[in-house]
Length: 170
Image (cartoon, rainbow, N blue to C red):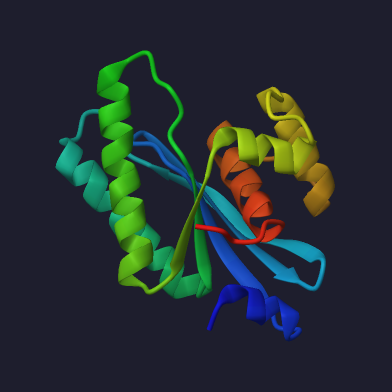
C-alpha cells in the first residue's frame, strides 16, 4: 500500500528519519495523522572513532534494526549527502548511508531521500537557513518542550517533518 493512502484513509503514517554519520547518526520517529505531526521519539546512535569502521557500521545497522522493530515505521526518510571538503569524510558517511538504506530496504520500508535544501525549505521556508533556525522551527512545529542539544537529532527530526509534509516522491 502506498504511504499516501495511509494518511488519506485516516490512518497514521509513521516515519523513521535519519541524519547519517559514522560518529553520530541522528534518528527520529514522527507520526502524521491528517495534518497533525507528533514527535514520538528521537535520539542518536553514537560510535567510537577508536573502533574499526566495520564495527561502527554494524552498530548503526543493529541499532536501526532495533528501532524499526520497536517503533514499526511505515517509511524511512534520509538526508542526502552534501558537499564535503574532506574526501575521507564523504566516503565514511556514504558507507553509513548505505547501511541505513539497507536497513530500510531489509525491513520493507519505502526509503525516501531529501536534500539539505529541501529539508531546510520545508522546515523554515528558507533553503539556506542556519542550524539554530532549523532547531527553533523543529521545536515550534512539533511543540517540543525542549529542542535536542545535538544537531544530528534536530536534523533527523527536520528530515521527518520534510518527508511527512511532502508528496513522497522518490
